Image (cartoon, rainbow, N blue to C red; front, side):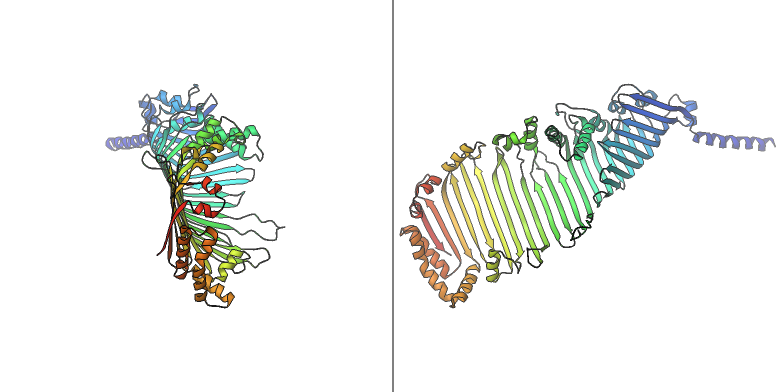
Length: 627
């Protein structure tokens, strides 16, 4: 009996001890601190029983009914668990104390292996609007001096109330690495009057899955499958991020802000745009839909519109790599129309000149600016490109029957960079294969003429490329060309000399004088027929009741005389007229080269002072040939 009795007592003691280890005695209740606009309250602080009994400070504890008010933010959590705490009890208590110390400095004293919470509710006042966010299954891992090595949020939901309705957001799993919590807090509680504080990395990488947004006021919904980002940098704004967001939200509700408010709004937006930088950001799998609210008195109801985007990405610029933004796989439309775009990219752009120019205004209204000041606000475009464009829409002309219009385009690209006084010195604009289906009921004269020539579609391309060479004071007209499928092409190249920096002067008189002083040094014109001349002759022959071959012979013979009557009987006019005649007789490629007889070039004043084209032509050496 003694042995059995002792064994029973030991088993009971073991059970009691094991249960005791799981108990969490309350060591503090109803903790409240209030300092510097920050209010912190905790219903209960609990530590494990064994820790309370045998240790001076616990390496794990729990907070119940936590509420923290910080500026326009209020954080609430039913429970927060700390484990593997690596700092002293005094450092932990300082986080909740009433001492007038910035929150960022308090956070820098926190270290723990893990901090978890089943749910955190965040409420933020944005002017007259309220934003509420719920974070569920939050886990912060490896916290050292307030910086979090990795954070995991199981799900997130947000509601934003406004005068027109509510906006609801929800996210799936969110992961963040290298989250600098003290730096993030400083953004919202620190004012930087100089707007010159250095950028600090807020987090290393972030991933968000299954974003879902619904705007009940505008009847708009948006879904994004995944968002990735890395290397997000930021600095405080002049009025702190908290004050900036509140002001922008307030301005968003005003239809007619005062001039003072408009000036402040411009300065605030400039400050905010310059206060962050992103190394890389990508979002994939967009789906969106908009359902307009119907007007019962309107004759035509508005159809819902929807669309998708495969990918949107942004890569920040570095010393050797320009900034790049791109959109891929866009498709959008409604009941009557549909638009598809294969890709849109913007490379080498920069708003830095615009931000610097707006900052230098110091509140001066844009309407009062002179030309020089306005030039400082022009951003650097870089290269913008559209590819794979396909538009199918209903064309409704007055009094006519609705007809579908179909437009496709392979590529459109524009480069405008290397600015001088706000103007680009390198320009290239190209459009390739813009195909337009010609409407059969059009009243446009050009469309009717093309239809009469037998064209059902118009397929056109053009290119304009020019660059300024400062060292040579020249503008190279690399190519100005236009071409149409089954029509032909026209191309011009050349060089303009005496093109000084004054061409780009913000002073209009100086720029005009420089333009007058510029002189053409050479020009080449190439005309190629690919069917347009033949169609024209066939149409004209039909109207004149003759044959295309007969008309071709007449036009070819008459060309030298027509040119001589317009430009005189000079050797240059004869050379040009004979070449045009041969080109009409046997279409192919007509190549014309022109060069001024004066080595200094042919300028605007040479053309202005010539009493007629014959005098101007006499100042040029012209050669022409047909290939």
